[in-house]
Amino acid sequence: MTDIAESMALDAMIAGFIVWLARQRTPLPGRSHCPNTVERFLRWQHLQRERGADHTEDAYCAELRNAGASHAEIAPIRASIAQFRRYLQTTG
Image (cartoon, rainbow, N blue to C red):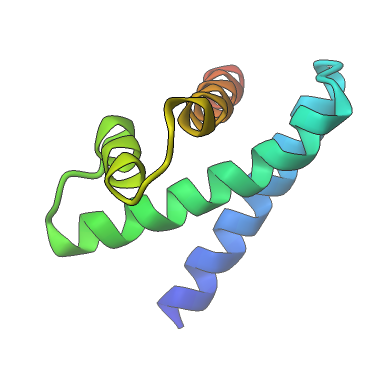
């Protein structure tokens, strides 16, 4: 039951983020990929917390780099997470 509640909370947070992005007049390409990127990061972060492992943005990007992602692939991921951080600051 907790997984369902957490999933619903994540879905609601991502939905709010999508609305916020639209109001920021973020260009459509960034707006369409950004929520998916953030959701993947948040799900990864949740699993890392459960394992008691490093769950920071830097750890996530290091894991992506170790899996073969280039700097050019990681840069937009960091930008998406930064956008999400701004969203959280405006809603907090």
